[in-house]
Length: 208
Ligand code: OGA
Ligand code: MN
Image (cartoon, rainbow, N blue to C red; front, side, top):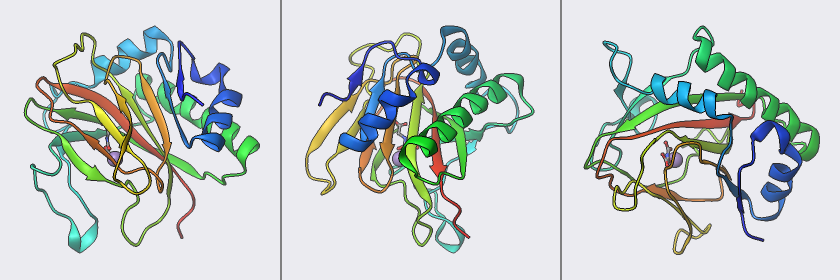
């Protein structure tokens, strides 16, 4: 089944999202949220406030490292206190409860951050499950690039479970969202030739 849907706003299509996750394990929505919200989120995804965005790291705790050749973004976690962020978080909350009702995933919460990749940056092939902490179940990435063109780079390559074959390439266009099973699909961000903006997020089960 083709995992690409045209103009599907999340809140109206939870049945379809659940079905795709059950069958292919991932899906791409081309207009995941209404246009006004997407524009407001894109505006929030700018590194213009001192110290809001920080260098992203790989690993956790003692293993935490920053190697920009592996992961080159700067990130800022969304905050319920911000008017725009809270609308997005509420929509993801309704997706969380809707998927739990349909798929019994036991999703407990959702964490997400804005990410900005400068030109020349990417993210090498990886799985989103943090070592020793298998609590990320579903990954989401919402793209916030207004005028993304072929040649700008920064596409997301999604691999099969073996990590050998690319099964989908997603262009990081404004309003596109990919949702995929975190433990199943290795993925990589191709080097971007332009500033690349997104929100990466994870639905988690209660790890403790
Ligand atoms: C991540 C990630 C993909 C993307 O942040 O873990 O894989 O397309 N992001 O931005
Ligand atoms: Mn990832």
